[in-house]
Image (tube, rainbow, N blue to C red):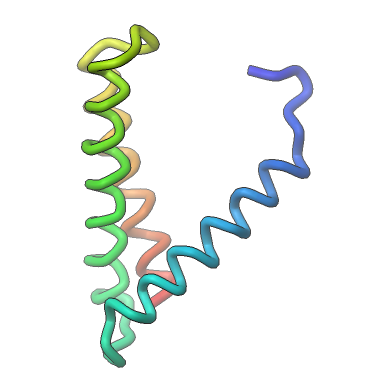
Length: 88
């Protein structure tokens, strides 16, 4: 980890990510906006990022072992579910 972390880039990536997820959710929800619909959307984003990308990284790098990737996938699914509920 960088010491100290670059807070500007952390804030920027969160703003860009929020804009992207909000825009995609607006298209996906088809006018039905709710916390539960947003949570379901966020879970699918978490599955894509946590499992999809996590397993890709596992297959191409030695950064973490399988157990850590699976824990990271669960965290991504829950985190993105919560973000989706807030957006919904």
